Image 1 (tube, helix red, strand yellow):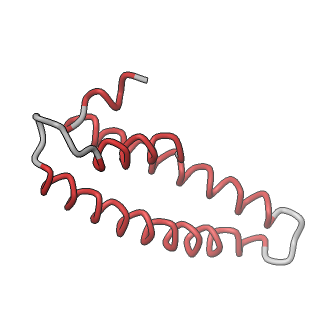
Image 2: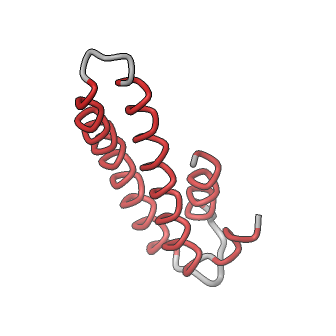
Length: 93
């Protein structure tokens, strides 16, 4: 997740990109950062709620970790699909 996010941020911060308007990239970066912060808060709340099924039990930590992994995989896939359309070179590595 961090690697993909870093690649996207680096691409959006490029000062010279003849294929994409700098103002568009600035706006995309601003929205990405806002979205990522909101997603992290949502993930933590959602996984805390999901793991409450095992509240106080030995499986609570496992459920929390599984939820985070699952949500992270979904987030990576969503970011990849969205940004590979605009920046196909992100998908090359």
